[in-house]
Image (tube, rainbow, N blue to C red; front, side, top):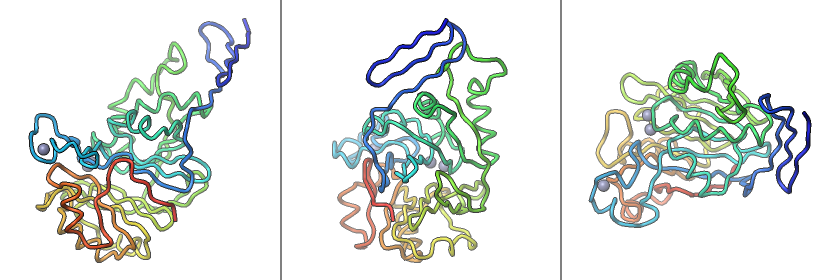
Length: 290
Ligand SMILES: [Zn+2]
Ligand SMILES: [Zn+2]
Ligand SMILES: [Zn+2]
C-alpha cells in the first residue's frame, strides 16, 4: 500500500507497514555556519560532580556548569561534531543544533562516545547514515559497546537504531564535508594515544597530557588552540593548568581556550589568573571559524 502524508515539516512515503520508509524531515535548527560551539567543557564526571559539595559544584554560576566534552564546527557544508558524549542530547537541544552531518572521534573513552545513540534521528534529516570518522581502535570499541546498532538482521522499523557508517582515519590529513582536517597525535597518559584535529587555524586538543615531538609543527600559526586543562595540579592523563599554560605558550596561538575542566577550577577566579591570551572555555561558548 502506498500513501502520502504531508505537513509543514514532514513528508512520509510509507511503502507498507513493515518495510523501510523513505522519510524526509526538516530539522528545527539554528544555523551555526562560520562558528564553532563548545557543547561541553567538563571532565569525564561533569561539573557539578555527583555528591560533591565543593564551592565550584555548588556555586550555581552558569560557567561552572560543565557537561562532558564535545565541540561542533559550523562548516559551509554542514555541522561537524567532535565526539558524542553522554550529554549530547541536552547539548544539542540547549544550542538548538538540530542536525549533525558528520562526526569525528578523538578517542574511545566513555565520556567521548556514550552519547552515540543520540545520532539516531539524523537518518531522517540526512536521508542516509551519519559518517563516523575514527581510528580502528575507536571503531572496535563502538562496535562492541553499541552492538545493537550493527545488527545482522533488518531492524523492525527505521529509527529503531542509529544508522552509522564508519570512515577510517589515521594521522594522515583527510577531508570531511569538503573541509581539510589535519589529525594531531596526542598522548593521553603513558599508554593511551588520541587524536586532536586542526581545521583551518583552529585546533581541538582534548584529553592529553603531552604533545609528542612530531605534532608540534602541526600546531604552528594557530589563531585558536582548544587544549585540555583538568585541574591545577598535574594529572597522569591530562594537562594540569600550569603544564597547559606552558604548552599553550610554546604553541603561541592567538587565543587559547582550556577544556575538559574539573571542579578544581572556578571559572571567574581561574580566568583572572591566566595570561591575557588564555581563558577557560564554558558550555555554549562560540568562536568564529578562521
Ligand atoms: Zn575525556
Ligand atoms: Zn565539586
Ligand atoms: Zn580520555
